[in-house]
Amino acid sequence: MSFAADSVVEPTAGSQSSDWLMIGRVDTTRETDFVEAVQSALGLRAKTVASVDFYVDVEPDSEFLRVALPDETKFRVATRVGGVDDAYLVATGPGVRVRGLERRRPEAHPGLLTRPVVTPVRLRAQRGQRLFQRHPSLP
Image (spheres, helix red, strand yellow):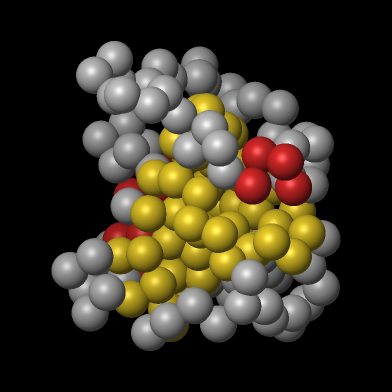
């Protein structure tokens, strides 16, 4: 799944920007918690997910690594869900780049020509809301 971050760092509630950066991909074969959160947002699971920690394979030359490099920096998050009317799921709460997650950092696939920067991200839903809202395009 493609993964986008808004270049607006430290977003305020309801802030909108057209400065989205496609920064990389979420490897759905290893990030099963993220996949379950997406399935929940699409109504494919009964369980509601309020938070998820996962790793993103960020392109090494991505501006995101320069803008959101410090740990605990907040940013808006969206993911593109192919096959579902090419919808975007936009997180209701900010994403946070964290130092590390409880589980070990995965290795990038050895067959990739360009090695991504495996970056830990934490998402939490806004109080009383679902983790993602569905949009036909990036807001």
